[in-house]
Image 1 (cartoon, helix red, strand yellow):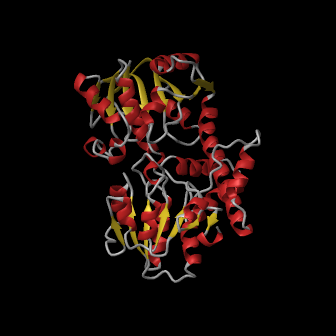
Image 2: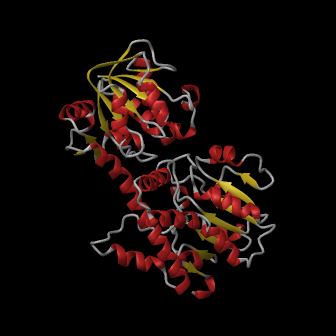
Image 3: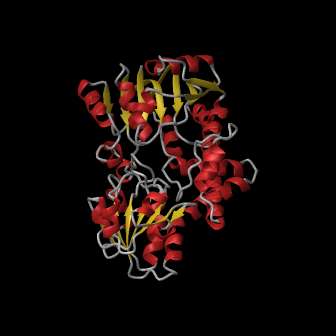
Length: 430
């Protein structure tokens, strides 16, 4: 099929790489906000396994072509839109571009997180020349290629049998092990994507509230988590307390769902509370640090491990580290920070703050002459540190675990003071 991809999102890049690898003739039009020259060198793209290599191979074979503007009389069988929520009008502009030629039975694939009902609106802009389908983005950052080529599930929203047939053919190469499509009406698929992330965020925020209560009551929240997860009605997924979630998709999907609620005339007190809890939890480690030092933070040096919003990505969109840094800097705290991938993005985000932050290339360099260590992102490289070395490096021997990845009692047995999210241990307690 002749496919035109529009956008500069991870989902666009993944679709370009995957579709061009299985015989489709793909033309990729990056969004003007992030042109090809910028996009191809983005650290978050180059960190994704297989993507850049496959894109380069497809460019060399001619299966993929990158353009800066729609070409005259550009005929397409499939137009794939993967844009950010703020780029809705760009989609509308492209659909009405005079150079775009719709073939009979063409399919418009909305892979963007737009308001519910947007797929129908976009289809209408084609003059009903195209069949509109909603294919919500369900890729996982850090494993986008695997998510696309070996999908656990595709949410497919369509209202015409022919549209479903065309979309199934487009993705047939990635749907051979079993039928991964869950087909439903267009609007239902759009709302389902938002509802899933809303539910996951609610579980995380609820668990964080329980962790706060456990802290107050002197209860180890890990016992509570295990007890809750053992209930078959609840399960273990997304019950890990932490110092807040972020990400370019998860956070904005929640805000989009809240917007949908408001636009429909329904006020969502639950969603608003979930969002509020998450923003508060981004300050959790700072509040623990403040409490430990009774507010006397000026002049302290704090090591931070991790800046990315999750392991496996170089992105810091809405990441807890941004809130944490602002709080620390406001108290005159100097930060020594390490992250395996997100340092360039963080440097660009914080600007000229050289007097307040030092970026290092080795985790232990961040801890040298520091008072305490904060674990913010649970990269695998941080899971099993040299505890004796940390005990020697950290002046106050304090570990603040924002992801509860360490064993409190073992850390305490190494002579360190451990503070997690709803967990704690001191050497003197052993």
